[in-house]
Length: 210
Image (cartoon, rainbow, N blue to C red; front, side):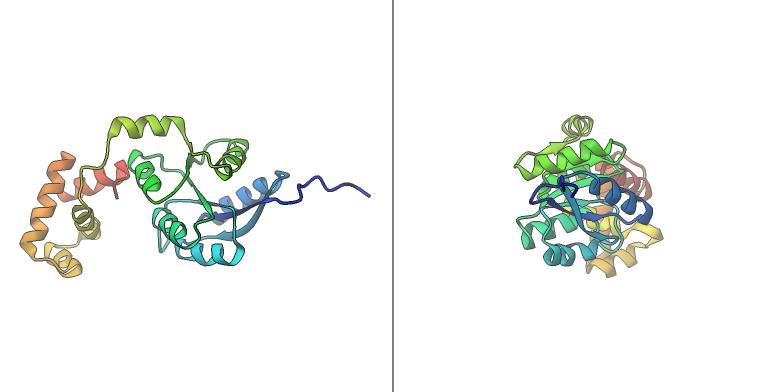
């Protein structure tokens, strides 16, 4: 009989990726590693915690840009509800602000998607042994960029300003006065060095502050 070369206990992996083809290909490639087993695949951020509670993965690979709930918020949920699961962020968007937010949410790894699958498999093994694995170029960029200058409330107001929302719309949505909203928007515009709230929103997103 042929011998099974898989170890007695494989590393259990949860994969959260909204693009079905990418998710399937990544699951297939990781499954070819002798010590890795993809035990759950989800396409939306709100499904991550339930899948982790059901399948009890050792490591969760989370994209950031997920429908319903982003991967950074889901990482914080996993830290609180499934603390034994190590979180590794895998994203197309190598933005300095994302790295800081991921670490604050309890992630122990941050890699961009264009790397070889062998490096990803190695990172999964490393985080399981207690190491922190961060893309070197992104780590350097995050250090040079510094922390976000925006307060939590300024971020809330900028997010609410998307899609052409008026000051009145933002005020009603966040239960603030219109003058307070204007003050937050003005402050965010100044801190981002932009000319208006549309540019401020774009700049904050490009830096990964939102």
